[in-house]
Structures are given as C-alpha cells and as structure tokens.
Length: 132
Image 1 (tube, helix red, strand yellow):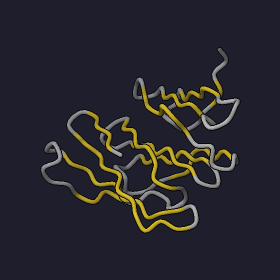
Image 2 (cartoon, rainbow, N blue to C red):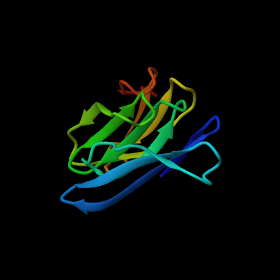
Image 3 (tube, helix red, strand yellow):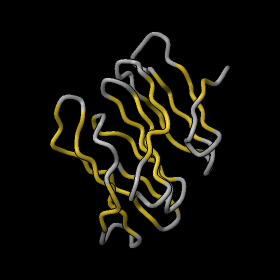
Image 4 (cartoon, one colour):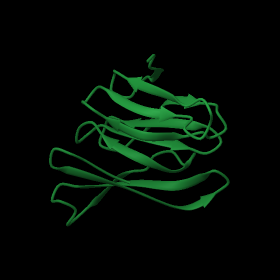
C-alpha cells in the first residue's frame, strides 16, 4: 500500500505471513520514491493492510484477519498503537481514507449483508458508525 502527504511518500511492505499475521514495515521517501528509509514496523496482527497519511509524521493502517484493526503512528512510523479493534471475524475495511487531517471514513464489514459507514473525526483515534 502507498500513501502520500505533502512531500512524503509512505510505502507499506509486508511478507512472511502466517496464521492471520505478517511482518510489516513502513518505508518513507521525501524525494518521490527515489530513495527510502525504514521508518518502523506496524504490529504483525492482520494480513496486509491499507495505509493512509495524515501528515509526514502521522500514519494510519487499516488491517484485518481474525479481527479488524486500525493502527496509528504519531512519530513517523517509529512506534504504533492499536486505536480500534473490531472483534468481527476479520470483516475488514473498504474505501478507507482521510478527507482531511482529522476526518477519515471507511466501509466496515463490506463482506456482510450489513456493512456500515464508519467515520473518525479525531485523526483516526476513534471510529464510529455514521447514521445516514
């Protein structure tokens, strides 16, 4: 997954998957991807994921396997915190992204008969269903 903000591009790389997890690393570039440096490693829980950038130092990863998670880094990818866990059997997210530095949206449970639009208004720290 690739995300960009300002002059910073983030590349989420993953591999060595097993039993609902894989190794993940975030590599950052400030020269359009010509060179990159290892920024850090998100949690291993979940397979793959979708990366979003809120600022050059704030990154969000939407991920799923046995559950669905949002991971957040406030320090350029050096450390990550799990901000939200949905114990949903790995329904996952679709159409995940941020419309501003504080407002994010995603479709949660898109593989079921009852998907819901969820929204964050605090930069991905909390996520709530959006009533339509």
